[in-house]
Image (tube, rainbow, N blue to C red; front, side):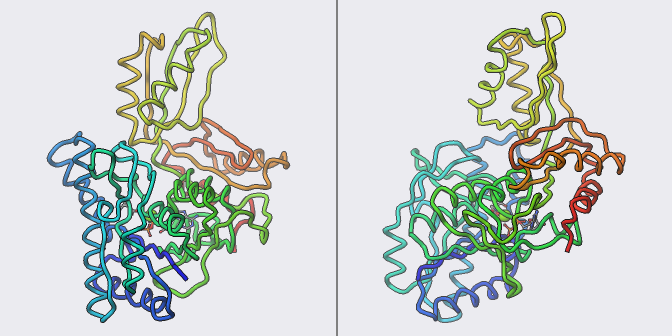
Amino acid sequence: MLVVKKFGGSSVADKERIFNVAKRCIEDYEKGNQVVVVLSAMGKTTDGLIAKALEINPNPPKRELDMLLATGEQISVALMSMAFHELSVPAVSLNAAQVAMHTTSAYGTAKLKRIDTERIRHELDSRKIVVITGFQGINKYDDITTLGRGGSDTTAVALAAALHADSCEIYTDVDGVYTADPRIVKNARKLLEVSYDEMLEFASLGAKVLHNRSVEMAKRYGVQLVVRSSLTREEGTVVKEEAKLERMLVSGVAADKNVARISVIGVNNMPGIAFKIFNLLAKHNINVDIIIQSIGREERKDISFTVAKTDLKEAMDLLRENSTTITAQDVTSEEGVAKISIIGAGMSSNPGVAAKMFEALSSANVNIKMIATSEIRITVLIDEADVERSMRTVHDAFDLAD
Ligand code: ADP
Ligand code: ASP
Ligand code: MG
């Protein structure tokens, strides 16, 4: 068997945790399995590196930021490999360039394109545990890129797909995927299984337990994932094509505070304007979520939408620079907002779901600023200060607790 095991930052935060991980991997190795370990940077290293960069330059060049951030994962893999050697197990650490994990050029948001497996296969065949940096890649200029925050999960899934691994285990600091972030909603319930589609919504809507692109990739290549704790032996959550165990109306609640609202005011009420606005943002890799267009008054209308808070400055600069082309009279923004979403595959055929969510929010006196729906999710934009309270209220309203 070939197993890919990914450990997040908190699982390798210090010496004890590193040895704990090494020992769990050795259990697999001693069963005769081939073991590939994917690691994130230790603890809050990546946050620390970003803070260092901002001390030097509040707007660091993205190429240089990636060069810096990728060092975090390199520390983890080197130390982990040393731990294996200390425990008398042969191991080798590899970074993205050594493996050759090829990505698109977009620094900070690179996408994995192709992974060369030759070196990894060679090391596995010589009975080494192969310890690989998550989160990073190299682009066509041989520069280091990163996959976006939380991207090590995606590295693990991509490796599992490329190596046709028999299992892909994501170890973290909670023992599975819950109906809501268990740190916020204390009585959240662990899901034994969750479908790719639901997990993708969960991840895209703020449940950072898995990087959204890792789920996308798992679905595309049919990689079954298990999310488990690195500190306990609890059974985790299986992420797979069809989760049959629990056909729930609503499977969970997610929140995302990395949100800001932009309003493009007074654009011409004519064909092509929305295209121009969103094409401009798309060309710069800026994702847009909830979109609302006001009914035109006279010749003009307003278009409002949300972007990630981390993209706000770039988006505002772009829209202002292009205000003539997009015919905007003004462009405004609002921070201090957050998204709350409910997710569930059974939602589309049940008309009362949205009403129930809005009732719960209104009884908690939470004002809804924007609404978006799809077949399997309902998202509302609210004040950031209301997030935790709203999550618990909505979680209770749908009886999701243990
Ligand atoms: P890692 O460093 O292991 O990648 P992350 O911090 O990226 O870990 O993700 C794990 C965290 O995700 C948990 O500590 C938890 O607070 C958060 N989380 C958010 N939503 C959920 C959810 N629905 N189920 C489980 N964890 C969640
Ligand atoms: N170290 C990176 C981050 O903190 C990648 C990851 O943890 O998955 O975002
Ligand atoms: Mg993570």
